[in-house]
Image 1 (cartoon, helix red, strand yellow):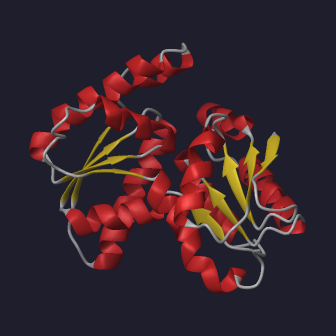
Image 2 (cartoon, one colour):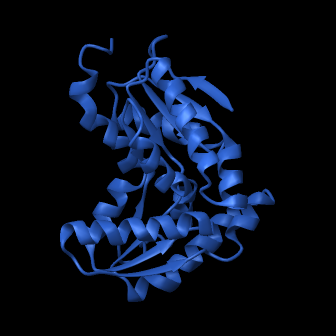
Length: 234
């Protein structure tokens, strides 16, 4: 586990919990743009994702996430943003017993996808993310009273390319899957925050349909907590 305190003071107000070591660098600027009134600290625990991949959402994984949330609460955080979509269902479980808000990174993205169209393609590089994200989209559709069709793909080879240290190939394979699905869908969802960079590999003219990612809209959730942070930021 690694903790990084963001700029703006010694009393951070929001914990941003990652399971991929590269994500604090991505979310730092986004938080400054989307929720400038909060002071974040970043916690990285890659073992959570490793255990999810190996064993699934065991109670022990939820307990460890709950322990991170409790530590964040004790450190003065007023909310925890979980940036790992694979941990989404676990985050919802922990939310029920937490003393502070626990936010899923992908909830705003799922809601936007349902508002955008009824033929939704969900792309992930991990099966542990694919199922939870597709289920979240279907649940959001039910809440909005909309009937949708959801197609899923795990972008074959992309995860292995990233693990082998080939991020360019990882992004290319995701873009290729997006190109394959675009003609038969109204909107595509890139389920993992780590997939957002693949947008740069898409054609200059885009795909002709929206491609949604979770980092920006997920970070923007914290702006809606403005009243809860009033007076806490200088």
